[in-house]
Structures are given as structure tokens and as C-alpha cells.
Length: 176
Image (tube, rainbow, N blue to C red; front, side, top):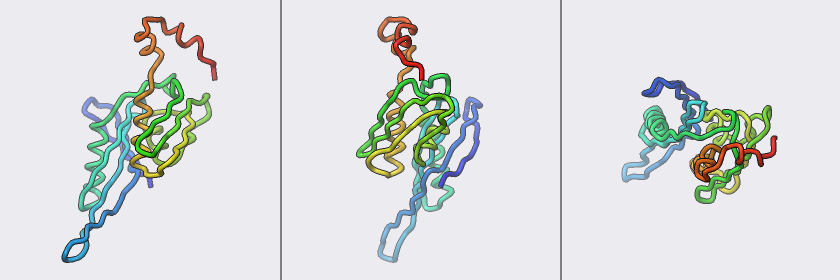
């Protein structure tokens, strides 16, 4: 269940969001049951920024709005190679969920499961292979994917840290 919206953020950039999951939560009280809803939303600008948010409310639209606002506040910039794939392979972990992400050659497309696919699409990745291992809870899978993406380092950052030139670092990489 993925629903997509477009909005502008405070800087005028086009921010899209996708609804990944809605849970109906029941609280049993003396007079019967009280229902609430929890929503999970992923937001991104399709050019290197992505974030996710969680919202809870008595009504579905209000929960989605809260989750969307939370996702837009948590946007993080991820460095991408040529704006289409990852610089290197990574594994993101959160709880018992693991997401293995591998860069792919041009034309591969996004090969990933449901909730992780939403993260990659809104990040702007065009070529990637990903596999989620362990728990299938969409909350933990998205947290694991974003955790892994935050570990992504560009050759420029690594070169600056090592006081070397970018060419010295990228020359060892095999072209895929």
C-alpha cells in the first residue's frame, strides 16, 4: 500500500512523500474498544535527500499528516555516484532487521522489496540491488535502510579525510 504526494519544502524544493504502512491500533477500555491509527511515511526530493516519519492519531488522515510532517523534518542528504547509484556496498541494521544494499550497473533498475523500494525511489537512486534479511516489520526495515544509507561515504569525503586526491582513491575501483 503505497500512496504518493508532492509538496514544496521551505526552500522551494519539490518534496514527494509515500505512505508505506497504516496500522490500526486497539485500546481496550471499560466501555469497549478505542481505535487509533499509526502511519509510516517516507519523504524525499529524488535527488539525494530522504527521510521517514511516524504519526499516530484517532483518524487516518491526521495520522498521515503527522507522519508526513515528521518525515520532512528528518530529511538527510545521501551522496550518490553519478546521481543514480551507491558509491559502495553497505549493510544497514536496526534491531533484527538487516538491509543489504549493493550498487548496480546502469540499466539495472531498483531491485528491492516494498518498503525499501519507497526509500530508494524517493532518494533518487535508479540502479540498486537490495535484500532485506531478518524481521519483515516495515518500520525496522526502513530504519535499517536509512541507517545503512547514512554510512555511505563519497570518494571526495574519504580523500579529504586521508589527505589524498580523489583520483588515488577511485582508481582502484573496478568499473561496473
